[in-house]
Image 1 (cartoon, rainbow, N blue to C red):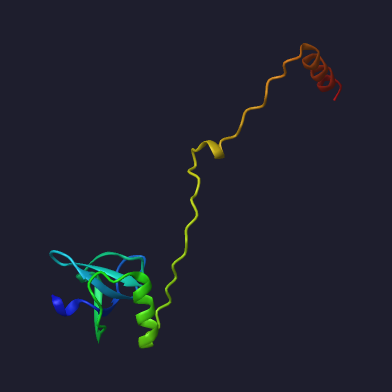
Image 2: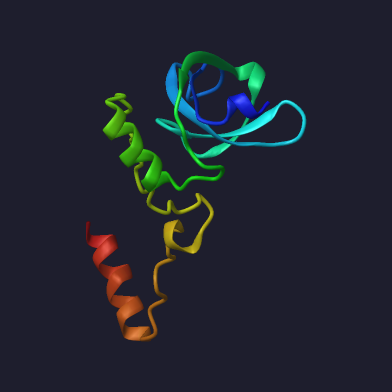
Length: 119
């Protein structure tokens, strides 16, 4: 399993399929931590297609260091790390329709009834 550390691979399953990654840590069982053109995450080895290319990295390398190393090696990895904005949930207070404010003045109520009757 030690020969997996630094191995360049392609993710073949999930929403990040067909994207390149590098194995940066080895976990128990059949799992590894990957980083690269994918979000840094735990991944099953069965979901990866390993290549013959191997980078010399230390265990748990940071994303910034890995990005610099890949650029130095001439390996094309897009690194699309987008910052997601916080979305409002459909039932949150920001999205609720506010009820109309009740009219406090009795004369104002009478005027609105009269104008509606004329129309």
